[in-house]
Image (cartoon, rainbow, N blue to C red; front, top):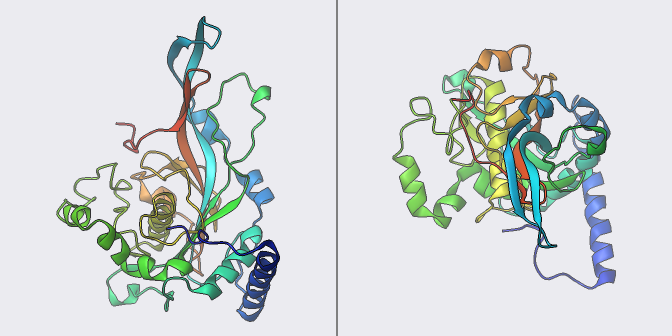
Length: 324
């Protein structure tokens, strides 16, 4: 369910409510201890740090299509596929915090509302030998404009805002901690998923981020020995909650579901080029990428296809991260 949907008050009371909400966010942000990563990025810096080579490396011509034109003739187009930056995924251990300056006030304000159960711990019990990791998570839409007229290639570019907030896990505390909301919404599917083999033995692209781990249960805990890899997996899970909320609490639906074989680019704490979701060589991802505060920030690249004039742009399905 959408967190901000429902019966709206009159315009005068709405203006007061919005002002009150922002003041709550500012007050909450001021009272909390500041972290080293907080508000260190902005939409402008994220655009500047976007790995545009990801688009060029993934661009391919799938064919030439022909379709009837509105005037009664025949139109032809180039059917292309490429990755395109469409969102930002963030995981942090400190509630109410964000790397992104434009989101910090909103995240702190939403945390004060505690819409569906408060979270109570933001630590790991890896010292007990379980490798259990927990983080809060945020999902933002960020569709970066690209001057396609300056390029010689037709580009599959999705439509969307430059920046908007989709999901803040603190408002979905019950679902993000227990996953019970998903089980109650579809108990048959939950039982079926529980009976399937592990992703380590059968990394099905539809339900697994390769060997990183399963997308379900869609909770903020992951039994992964590496905090870096847990950050990747939990960020993807949050993205999938935001894209298909079911009974979960979201600010707005994220229109670009993270899928295996699509792309993820680490930005914080260490900038790296984009890599396929589920990429099997974990050491390349983990190298020099640990965060002392358990905070990680990624740009999400969806894989899109389009044949302009004949085939509207769409997000393609999951695939093997190794291209097999």
